[in-house]
Image 1 (cartoon, helix red, strand yellow):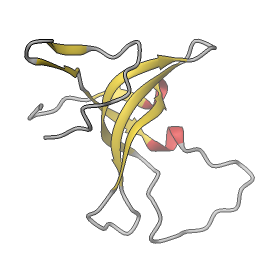
Image 2 (tube, rainbow, N blue to C red):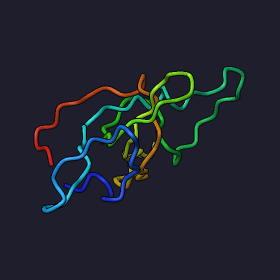
Image 3 (cartoon, one colour):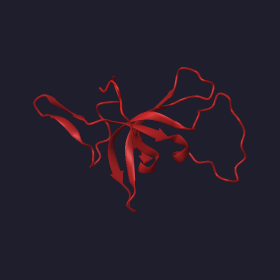
Image 4 (tube, rainbow, N blue to C red):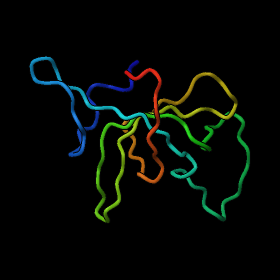
Length: 114
């Protein structure tokens, strides 16, 4: 299973596996991403339903490749994931190398790892 491109963001905290002779690749950690923790609506904004819009609620699976620290000491994970649409279509919006705050991530167990 391809969890992303081989040329992922090389953060100072990306872990690598392999060697120069056989090739190196980033260590991938399966995670759960809490979408409603990273895409927060402004409290005073009007709400309306767009049936064909992206469903930015709940948790979805993703793959963590590395970390970036912020100036204030917070951590941002470098994550690839697919956002579902509200109308349940099978196609999802694939996003790569997104910076996601650590509080919106949690490790997940994967039955068939790479």
